[in-house]
Image (cartoon, rainbow, N blue to C red):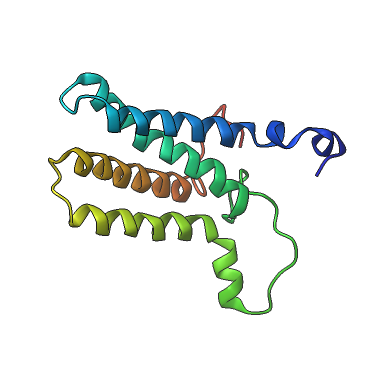
Length: 147
């Protein structure tokens, strides 16, 4: 960690996570308390999926690694065990995949037209999109982007 970052207060070092979590909380509260038939409630339901995905990427790239991604934190050392090394090199995609399977299992048990069924369907869609982007950005590029 750079010396300047260590001098910053904890709240400043984690401000992106805090704000994203606060916004997700706002959308959850709105969805719980607003009239289910209102446009604002529908907006909050969609925003839950979007901000959950954003928070997942913020935290996922902070704690997990994906080989070939410049966004991932650098890996230190190597494991002698090939399986452990493979799991470590692809931990971000594996984590997204496993949590996506949880959303899929939950969605399969819900009525897709129910209030929460729509939100969970949007969450599942968001997770599939994140997994696709992580996978695709390892091999594909876009001119003008950071890579």
